[in-house]
Image (tube, rainbow, N blue to C red; front, side, top):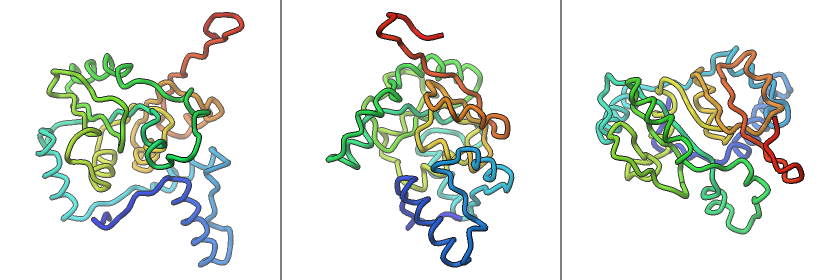
Amino acid sequence: ILDENIKIYPFFYLWSFLDLTCQFWTRSNKYHINLQGRYGDYHHIVKDKLNLNFVSGDSKRGSSLLNNLNIPEDEKWVCIHNRDNAYLQKVFPDADYTYHNFRNYSINDMMVAAEFLTDCGYYVVRMGEISDEKISTNNKYIIDYSNSNYKSDFADIYLLSNQNFFLGNDSGIWTIPLINSKIIGMTNFTNLHMFSLNTALNIIYIPKKFFDSDKNRFLS
């Protein structure tokens, strides 16, 4: 059930708060799942089917959102997302997160896939609170929601929860389709230690290419 007063915070803040609250009220660690350090515990989310639910009023707001984005209600859509520096630079302007730069890539790297998905009958919705680049396309089925006037916390959750599948990388936004048991395609994937997750989750991985500067070639 979503409320218009919901505020979305960085995942590690939200998880720590919920985890500590749960331990306080239950006086135990029975419901403690340390997702930050033990990626295998993501399996609990799928096993327990912790899907987000929408009430009738939310459905009406969702229909209005789709209308504003020119997506007919009976059509399918896929959400895509690329990681860049824009979000961290705005939210944490005084912090140095450049050590994460190897995880970034351009939205233009996803455009061939986006065009292919539209040929398959999907609308493609580019997600993101803040982005470095805008999409340049004449394809009316590709929607740059990240740079639209219709962004909201509700819209983020609605689009990611009702899509057919998600195509992106290991930036925090992927946890919403995970909670809703959506198929996830991880592109330019860098957290190689998480590969074991695909044994229980609906995740397909395409690793990012790593270049060895000493050998002057990509690793294989």
